[in-house]
Every structure is written in structure tokens, then in C-alpha cells.
Amino acid sequence: MSSVPEKDWKLFRKLQVELTAKACDLVFKKVENITNDRVGKEHQSYLDLYRLIEAEDAKIAEMFNNPTRNNVLLKIVSLKKYGVLSDEKLQLFSEETQGFVSRMLG
Image (cartoon, rainbow, N blue to C red):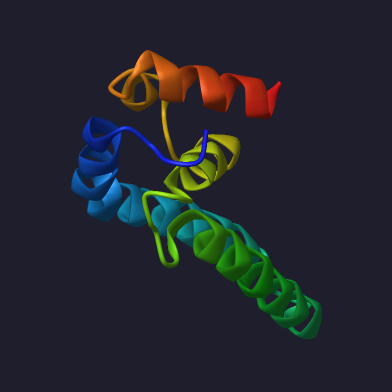
């Protein structure tokens, strides 16, 4: 499958802002875990935070950068893989797209 059905493309575009906010919130929670436990190990916490931001930025890019009808299926797979797209939201997509996501994630 090289292109997502039109209905799924429109749904992805509709959900994009909500999903981006959720992805960012998940990152903020990880940041909070690092910053809340930094006393006495500030430099290590800084390094951990730096690595976290690099890794999470790559995930954000994988999920959201330059979506097209030809690559949005892979974006949906990434959203599901990283816990941003819930089962409930995935069920809004066509059976074809759900099947693709399921096959890709094993």
C-alpha cells in the first residue's frame, strides 16, 4: 500500500494537532521525571535531559514531519508504536489502515 485512503488522510490531518499535543505531553512527563530527581546529580541529569530531547525530537519528526498521503501510513504506525495513538483513535481509521498498522507492529 503506497497511499492512505482519502478518509484516513483527512482524519490524520484532523487529529494531527491533538496527537502532537499528546506526544509533547509525553515528553514533558519524561522531562519532569529527570528534573524532579536531579539534586546531587545535576550534571548527569543535564546529560540525561539532553539525550532525552535528542531521542524524543527524532520520534516527533518520525511521527509528524512532512506528512503526505504516501507516507502517512508510516506516521500512523509510529504514532501507535510510541503510545501517542490510542486503540480508540486507531479504530477511527479504515480497516485497511488498521490492518496495515497491525501487520507493521506485529
